[in-house]
Amino acid sequence: MLIDVVRVTPGADFTLELEYDNGERRLFDARPLLAVKPWTPLSNWSTFRLARVEYGTVTWPGDLDIAPETLYDRSRPINGDRVWSAPQQQPA
Image (cartoon, rainbow, N blue to C red):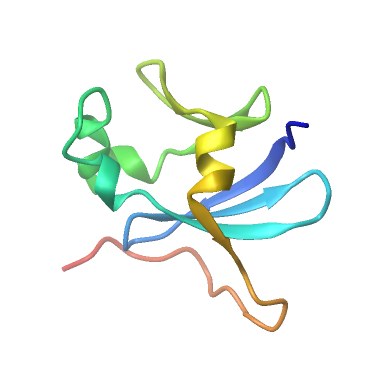
């Protein structure tokens, strides 16, 4: 059963806070993918921060995406107590 992503918040540390249609929240670390084609353009913060949800998964301009099952399988649950701050600034 595939669960759709309904919200994404990119972090300045190249993580994605994901919310799924079942209410579950998970954190995906994208750093391992940033050196691998076709995702190398995402190593630029100005591109990575443009993450958005389309068709139940996370996409970026230039027809880049990450399969929803990869996002789920390689992410970890976020503790319900965790408070997310305002959108993060570009790393120094």
